[in-house]
Structures are given as structure tokens and as C-alpha cells.
Image (cartoon, rainbow, N blue to C red; front, side, top):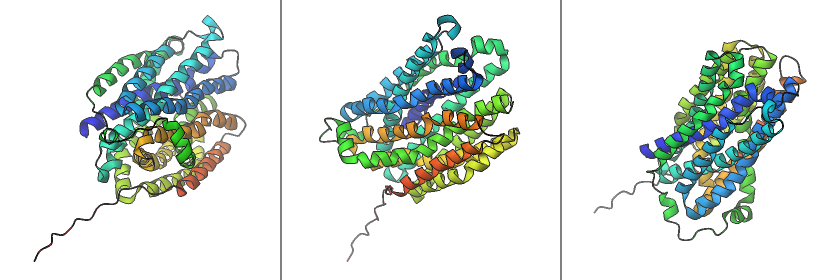
Length: 423
């Protein structure tokens, strides 16, 4: 389990590094480089639109790779999804600017971002299921939480490289070529991930199946359609909160408040490190108290914290901004630490790879794709404190809270020991 958890964590870290490095670039440089004729706000919105395309592609990737995972096994999904995401990320770093090739530049970004999302849509289902289906039931949430630590590691890697380059290079150097370096580094990371995953064994639960689903998506829609919609709605808040504080807040603080890029990246990264470190602890609580109670508590925390969070961000003070972001991410991880165990337990094994991945990634479309765009628009038309953003995130959190309330508990019930019969 330790080797499997480490390989899954490393793989998801690499995949999410690829995904996050684009979000950071969209917040900081892609607007003026790819949409130079737009105003600063419009350019940021357009860059965030290309960012959102990756979320639209993720459910399609979960269908494509979910079919492969339910028909051929979980392990092939891990290899192919990593190859696709890594190659498309390296290619983003090679796209010329608008000044060099005109409108072809944003078009290429859209296509490559779509391919990134396609690969990531398959990654989560494969990595989580391979870990969850190997794990002992009593500690399934704990072991399944290690792939969930991967996004935090990927985010810190992506933003750490951006931060180092931003500090070491001039504004002109960073805009000209420095922002491309993290994308090129994705190639080496992808090769390392493939090496780590080469020794993984197939899920025992998949090997035990007597009959495979002929068309997994059709079975999911026919028998689990309501469940997919509920899980997508339930996860929307987590996505919205996470990408509001890790993507939108970067552009808001640097463009509206005049906070330096280095300071803002440092605040966000420090909060993400704490979130990643606490993920296994929250998962242990999920094994002890159940998946649903943790999700309800996390959603309620998000709903209560969003207005204080935007007020703290608007101060422009690094410590207060850090506290606002940290509070949001702690509420987020309270629910997302157990999701890797919760979603697979909701679906039967023969369609689990498709059902869990589609529900997870549809939540990304609802909560993650539009949030940076909506938040940027609301902040642009508000005062110094973006109360509209806080109300928007609070509303999504309440929606997700209602969806979680309609989902069942799935934590395995321990089998009591049988006393030996004597006499």
C-alpha cells in the first residue's frame, strides 16, 4: 500500500502540476500575450476562458478513460492519461505569442488546454480507484487520500517554479520566455511519472469481476444518473472555492490591489502546503466518523467563510490574505480528503471508473470552469471588497450542501469479532 500510495500521489502531483501551471500563467501573463488588443480585464477574462476549456474537457476524458478503465483495467488509464497531459503541457510552452502568429496563438492554447483536460479527466479515476480498490476497508479513506495530496504537491511545484522565475527574471524576460519554462519541465516530470507507474499491479477488485460492462457510460446513465448529478452538484463547491483562492485571487490581488506577484504566490502556496499536510488527518477522521459527515461539515464551513475570506483578501495585507485563503482551503479539504473513498463506494465495481470519474469531473465544470470568469466579472463591477464574489461562492456552497444531504453514507461497517464457542 505504501508503494502504491506513493506512486499514485506522484502521478496525480505531476498531472495537476500540468493543469495548475496553466492556471497560474492565465492569471499572470497569458492575457496580454495572447489577447493584446483586449483591455486588461477583458484579456484576463479571455485567458480564464481558455483555462475553463480544460474543465469542459475533463468529463469527456472521464468518459473516454472511464470506458478503458471499466473494460481493460485501471492501470492502463494511468499510463495513457499521463502521456496525453504531459505532451500537451510541453506543447503549450512552445506556442508563439499573438504578435508572432496572430489569432492562431489563442486557438492553439484552446486546443492544447482541451487535451490537458482530457488527460486529467482520466487521471483522477484511474489513480484513485487503483488505490481505493487495493486498500483495506477500515483505512480506505486514509490510503485513498494520498492521490488527493497530489494536487497540493502539483500546485506548489507549479507555483514554486513560477515564483522562482518571477523573482529571478525581469518583467520583460518573464513575459518573453520565463513563463514557458514550467511547461517545458512537464516533459521530464511525465517521464518520471511513467517510470514510477511501470511497476504497479492491476486492481484486485477489477480482476475479480465476473462480467464487465459492455458500455459503461450507458449503464451509468441508465442506473446511476441521479447519483451522477448529485455527486457533481455536491463537488461543485469544492472546485469553486479552490480555484477562486488559487487562480482568481492571483489576478485580483495583483491587478486590483497592486500586491506583488511574489507576495501573492507565496501566500497561496503557504496555505496549499498546510492543506496538503492535513489531508491524511482529515481522511482518518473520515474513516472514524464517516464520509458524509465530513463532507457536510466542509460544505458548511465554505458557506460560512466566503464573505470573511473576500474581506480579508481585500485588505491587501499578506498575513490577512493568507488567513483568508487558509480558512477556505481547510473547509475545502475537510470534504475533499474523503472524496477519493466516498465516490468509488457509491458506484458498483463494474462501472465505478466511469461513474466516479464523470461525477467528479462534472463537478469541476459546474464549480471550476466558470468561477475565475464569474469572480473576475463580479470583482470588476464592485468596490474594493468583492462582496459579489463572496455571495456567489456562498451560494454554490449551499447548493453543494443540499446535494451532500441527499447522498447516503458509505463507510464500511466493521464486522464484530465472533467469540469462540466453548463447553
